[in-house]
Image (cartoon, rainbow, N blue to C red):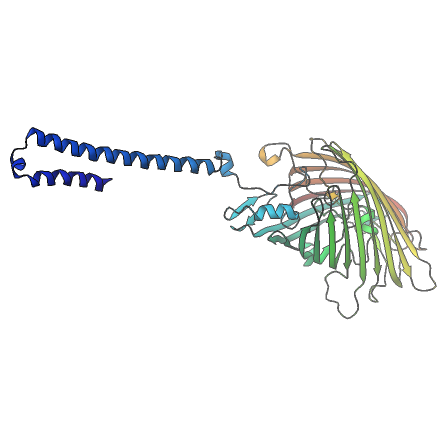
Length: 494
């Protein structure tokens, strides 16, 4: 535009310079010609300017139409949090537990490096959405006091760390994931969960994952629930007694499938992490499935079944078992089998039936384990069952995870750290254990009343009052005996 104006000025000067007389005293006609020339230049310039402004306006309209809708200040400030596609009443799952659809959604929406604060610790995401990482931790501190036993050695007060864990979990892209945790309780370093896995979809409504490593059992309702999410301080007798000889963990492979209202798993594992490689591992094949035939926003029915079969290593033929019945931290209050040698293999199986309506939940479990012994001796059967219930006084739904058929950490509606009351849950359980199929085997039962106060989704206080009965035929404390145990816990899970 500036160059056009200069050209107009130069035209006028040239006209004046071309006529010496005009340069001295221009006539009226010359001035009129000059004005007409400048007017024509100005008109041309104005037309070009209008055309340019019209083009810029059209460009601005097109850009505004293609731009995303403006966000509010709150939307701009809020980071993209993990959405829980499974159940709103539990804490959203971490990178190793989300499904493939959710993992794809995260990877498809990169927006720079993100740090999301969830249940206690942050989730880190790379700028391209490919890498996800989250630290993990668990601190469970217990105190237990027993009274009323006719044996003074059982009337003790003890403290202990139920769990003291540190670990991590993460994913690479939508399919690959991993998790690792180490427990430092009881002054020992113990590798617990440690695996890598792959997840994908089989159809629009079914997805799966495959895990390889040191795996936690998928067995029984409470047995499949983490120690930081159980409604009582200790799992019931079905989970603690009807169990493979290797315990809750084993190294191997597990495949899981998930539908809209069911899941199924199968695993083949050896022994848990140890330093023994001089003999063959025991081999355990296990499976579990659950189904929710009724599922609404406020009610659900749970049906489950599970089983395992293990071929014992030549180094694991001793099947002697002593199971707690009055809390974990009183080693004297137990039900025992007496000495049991010469085991060859075992098979265990069980069923689950329960559900919830509003804040009330009920769960019943029963299981049996058959131990096959050396030739010439009959099989040994151990049996256990339990019925438990709970009710949230503060309006929360029970922290049931419909994807896994187990309990998770509750999503507290009114956290204490935000000025609220937290969540308050009342619990009760009756459980029974029977080893009397053996000559020296005992039996016992326990009735528990409890209160859980969840300050927020990752901090809780728990107290259990237990009336227990044990009748052993072998060991230091034989015969019928009864007593009471009061246990309490402070727990933090990241």
